[in-house]
Image (cartoon, rainbow, N blue to C red; front, side, top):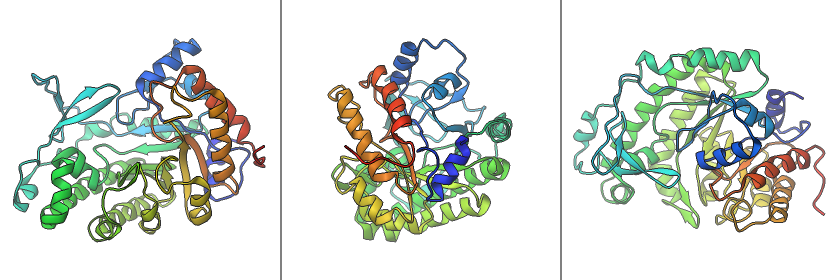
Length: 378
């Protein structure tokens, strides 16, 4: 069975030949694995999430990956500035700096705003800049027409409405206080972010929507032990904006599946996410509170597909053994794969402490273990 056919079969909640496989990985973990495999070939496929990364087609094929990605470009005219503290800026106005494998925000352009009018007057970069789509259409068409992989679209700009406002533009502490004390200001920031998302999606999907199978979106709503806000607050302030954005994606590209990323213990909001149009939930962080794979499949598996779930905190870390990894894969495939509706992947980016041997074994074992019919655990 071809990769794209495998993906759609699974999304129809039917059983393909095997579970589809995807990968999220940090640049450091990729480099270690590439060297271990002895790959010295061109790296033409953009693959970064949270950090710039290009990978080789040979790497993706070796790990049996069923997906390929299409990214919207940043505006070509933007010239990045490096500041004395080593941080660099972005075309959206926030600045950041590398701390280990992640680029963390060090300057929030909305941090000192006190009035709604300041938010309304803030100028986003131009979504219509033609350089954003230079080469993108050709790549998407190539993947759709000349390969059999499922194609994932990565829209430009920071994701979401809550996360861009809190993490990138305002700062988490101030924004969470805004939600409590100045909801008018918080709402203005999220609606400003929604307008950017709608414009970016329009430019991207109107051009290449026919070539995509998935659109990746995200808005972190949880942490390891709970939610970042109450469900009531989500439903009042954020859910209507999510519904509009994801509804617009489905309207512009009715065939695509929306893959929604939120870290953490978000089980109390899963029904809400289904209601706003989410088709696939990522990353199913298995050690987070309430995110038991068997329970999630039982409660939501007839209405939602799952992406991720392989533990990075123990099984894939330097603490875990190969036997731990095998058991982890056994558990997640046994829980999530029956009757389709599961894409095997790590529960976020594979970290630098995952050895190359373990990463390769993760995918080789999953390729074998994920064959249908799913065999019960021993």
